[in-house]
Amino acid sequence: MLIASIGDIQDRITNSGVMTVGAVGYAAIGGVINDDALSDGIITTDELGAYLEAKDLVLQHDYAIASTAEQLFMQEHAANMNSLNTAVDNLTAATAVVMTAVEVASVASEADTKPEQVELQAKLETDAYSLDAAEVNEYNEAVTAVETFAQQAGAFMAAANNDELTTSVDNYAAQGNYMVGSYTAITYTQAIDEFVITWDDSGFGTGFQGYLTPEMKNATEIYAAGEYINQYGAMPTQ
Image 1 (cartoon, rainbow, N blue to C red):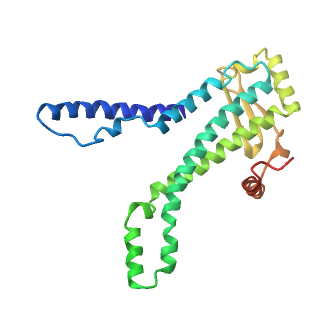
Image 2: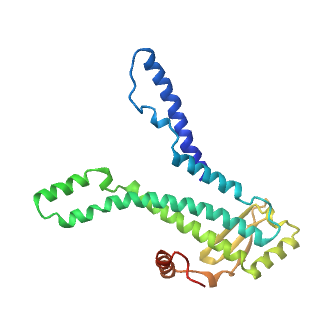
Image 3: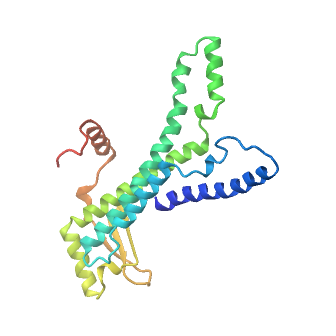
């Protein structure tokens, strides 16, 4: 999120620099540039807001080395929640593109006269009311990203709340004389319900499996939760 927001501002700066050179060049020979000709170099309020929000997320994130498994899992949860927020923003943008295109369905359903069919053709010939493979791929990738980061964030939160798992990780680290937070890699694979944590550069990780099965949520449960949140504004009481 921070990188993306900085990238948007960098694009503005690049545009401003190039267009300033052009504007000065035209001014020197009597060229009259249009009103707002350099607007692509203006950093918008939304872009500044996105940058400030992303900066605050980075500043608020806990990068301290975890001393317990619970802290480790909560740090990973926070990082994945940040990524999930970005993924949701991307999905919202991609959904807007797709929704605009599929709005043509109402026109198509009523296109039973020549003028209406001509109107339908005209809409389908415009980019806004037609879909291409790139837009569909972008939407599908956004859905997948939400699934990925939601799953990972949920898994790390569930892990932090699982005393049996955190005790197991803490004991293993103590036996190996590792500081828990000095791990070099951590992964979670939902299909086999396994965390793999690596504490050295050997490339070999230690697996902790079978702790989160009671927390698994299927598509039906997820949809029901979404409907409940849309109606009541919060998750149902557990």
